[in-house]
Length: 257
Image (cartoon, rainbow, N blue to C red; front, side, top):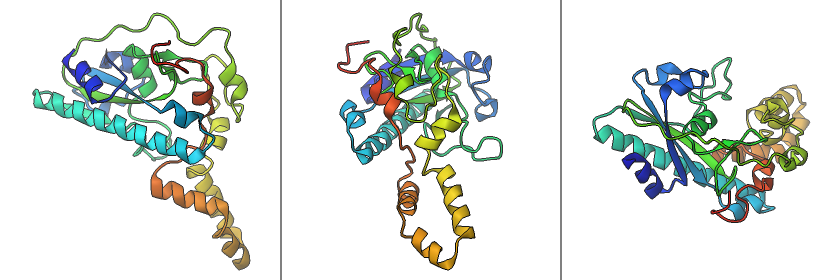
């Protein structure tokens, strides 16, 4: 309980523990990250509701970067606390850097953070495929710490926060990427959310290679190039937050599930 209380003091809004075996059973962890790991501490840090509701994209992106930094900070502090107690511990990147090797392409992390969060009891899956946390819904970013400490697992949630009849995220998705039952068409989602990430970079560079000298000059002054530059400079490449913003779970008050 000590490590969980510290996570809350540091700014996490939810924290739980699961065994490493619960992730191994579902191929949700890369074992060579930390072969001695026995436990996983899963955390969630919250977005600003007002930021996600804003019509200003840059406000949403800024809040996303700030929330990920909070996750990094909390995860790092928890890992150092566990190491100070004589255990091995490491924080898992909640965002970048990620493995960009062939076969992964930056799309698969060393730990499935959503699975870890659900197994640790800090939330349940919604129809959007996101983890819903009581009082916050999907307006969170997730993190995890692997440790050799034999921590006691917390209880997994028995119910679901996502209302059975609700389809707001499914019908509101601009990429039509949510067919239901928690499934996500990653290609359809990527066309919207990652339009100026790696996908956009490959498209832009390909066009530059084939372009005439005059067209190259135009492309270097174009809106896509400015967004690609900003993506590289800021480290943020999210351009869609609709499913997080629309979800009614935890929409109005922290105490509401």
